[in-house]
Length: 303
Image (tube, rainbow, N blue to C red; front, side, top):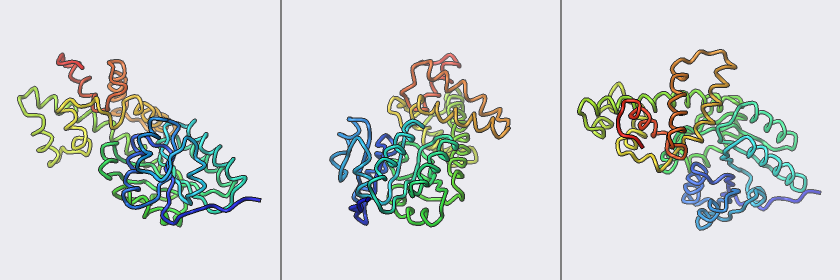
């Protein structure tokens, strides 16, 4: 016989306390919510222990105290591990449980997790995030929520405590598909921003002035606004999105493009730039480091 949950109405679980998860957890805690966190990283747990209601290596505390849990995970293996823990916990517990999965992972893997959780009476939503780690710290993320509309509506107030806007984009999986389209644009705009700033620099223009002026014109983009200053100041050592993590997203996009039979010549041309960033020692740097790659190709400063 299962036991009931000890749930506070303002409680929310955050599984995964990396760059995005920790920023969201901080905003949720500042809003007055009782946040129960979980992460396999000891360093992440120590960093967040002072601001959260509880922090643990496993997810049982989150599940015991929260009807709503947000997951921010680095890989399919991590997602499957979380699902395994949920199913093991579910055998001895009753009560409603909704999981909003915000990671950028292949749709097929999220669909498999949905099926497993649904069989145990657990609701899963597909809710990827649009924005960088720097934007997450400023509460400037967009949520592409997909799945059961009723549960999206229930989770919206929680998300609005840690993000800027929530879009209900329809059936489960549409969130991931929207995120892949968004990330394709991010991949292109990031490289084009680096090209443009280096071009202007060689013409004698001030890089920060270019960021400010161009962001306000027809050639502007969100990546120019967000990553342009990082490129201009060469501050990519402090990563909001690490190049090695971005490789995972690029691979997911590539496979999705292949499956959809969509030619993407501009995206294909951007892939070697990110690979070069990895080869040139920028794996742990922000993706703004593609500026250094373009600069090196032009025979300029390296590093």
